[in-house]
Image (cartoon, rainbow, N blue to C red; front, side):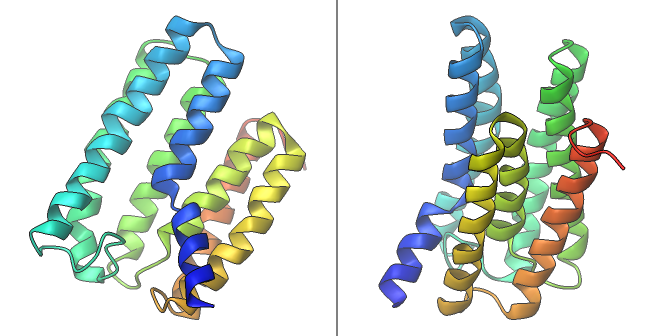
Length: 194
């Protein structure tokens, strides 16, 4: 069972799922030059540096593992990722990118900040919160696929618990963070009306 849990945990790692989503949506809906620019900004300026940072820190022993499962070690990851997400978010607004893209980046920034603040108290699951957020982004493009990713996040929760990377409280906290921020974003964008 641990092998299956490990496979699900790797397959659901937001360092892979979100860039894949960006590539599919950008190159499926935008002209090549815009898709290339946005993909470069999000993947090349946020995800690749974060992956390299985590890899180097894991290799030199600063991080116990690539998942950065230690709450204290995770602080430096947030401080590294936050300015990258902030710069790209500001760029999206300053260069008048689509409202949907700019707002999505803003809420991704809010999720990072919320997770960073929460980390002072509890190590919330970023796998869970970011995949909940991803499901809401996919929901805006294809609601059936968004629901499928949301359901997959249930398997991801099981895998994180099975691998003992998180406690029930930590995955629940990640779920709540991802869900609340996603709902607020969907309401802001008019996908959900009250």
